[in-house]
Image (tube, rainbow, N blue to C red; front, side):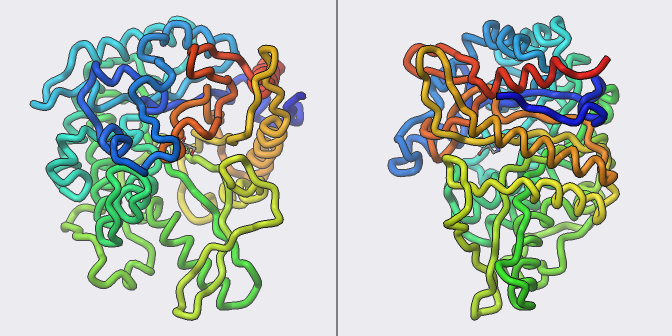
Length: 443
Ligand code: IFM
C-alpha cells in the first residue's frame, strides 16, 4: 500500500519536485469554446479511436478546473504539469483569444496561490486544424506560426509560469501522426514523419528563443519520450539492429538538441530524408534549462533478413493494461546512458505511470498493481541519481484518468479515478500512496 524511498535519497528532500501531469485535449472538454484541432478531426474519422469516443467532454476540466485544483492540492504535490491548447488561445487570424487566455490565467493564478508550481507545455498534440489544412508539420511555415504562438502566450501569461516545455514528445507527433498514421493527423509516409520531426525540432528552437527573451525567470526546455531498445540475443546482428532502432526511435529527437545533427543512420534515408536548410541546427541547438523525460516501457528487437530491425513481443513478461512491458531497469539504463552520451541539463521526469484495469468498488480503487509500478520506477530513478544523474523532479502520469488518444477512454492512467458519466473523481489507492510519500519527505 505504501510507496517508499530510502530516507537519505535526494528525492526525499523538499527541494525535489513531485508533481502530477495532464494535457489539454485529454482532460479539458469545452471543445465548443475553441477552434477545432487535428484530434477533433481524427476522432470524427470512423475507426481511428478504439471506442469511437472524442475529446468534446473528456474530464470537463474546462468547467471543473477549480475543484480539480483543490484535488491537486489535496495530493500534496509541489507542481502541476498542464498543457495549453493552441486552438483555445490563438484565433485563426493569429490574434490572442482573450477568453481562452483568461481560462489559463485563472488556472495558473489558482495554482500559484496554493504554492503549486505550474509546468506548462505549449504543444501536447492539439494542432489547430486550419494549420493542418495548410500542411501542418509538413509545412515549414508551421514552425514560425508556433514561434508566434509561443511569443504571444508567454507575454500574456507574464510571470505565472514556473517552467515551459515547448513540445511534448516530438516522436509521437511526428512518427505516430505523420509516419505510421495511428495518431492525428493520420498520415503515413516515412518522408512525412522525418519532415514533421525536423519542423517540430525547428519550431522548438524558434520558440526557445522567444521564451528565453519573454520569460527568462522560468525553466525553459522540451519534453522527450524514450523507449529504450534492447537486443533479443547477444548476436552481433541483433545488437546492430537494435542500435538502428534506437537511433530511429529515440536518438533522432535528442541528438539534434545537443549535437546539432541527426544520428548516422540519417544516411540510410535516401529520398525519405527531410529537407533541412542551412542554419537549422543552430536554431534547434538552443541551450536548455532542463530536459523533460517521459518513460513507460522498453522495446526488444531482433534483426531481420533485410538488415533491418523488428520489435518482438515479450509474451511471458509482466505488462500493464495497455500491453507495455513492466521493466523498471530500463529507466535507470536510459537515464545513465543519456547522461553518458549528452551534456544534459537537470532532468525532470515529466511523465511516468501505468494504465491498469481499475475497478471502482465502494468509493475505493485498490490499484496495488499501479502502486507496485510507481514503487519500482521511483527506485529506478533513485538508482540513476546514485550513479550521478541529476534529476530534479518527477511527475506522475496522470493526475486523473483521461482520453488516451487512439485508445479513447478504455485505458486508465490516473492516480485519480474518473467516472465519465458523473464526472466524479475518486483518489485511487495509488494517489493516496503517492500523497503519503510526498508528505513523508524530510525537512
Ligand atoms: O497519455 C499519454 C500522454 O499524452 C503522452 N505520453 C504518454 C501517455 C500515455 O500513453
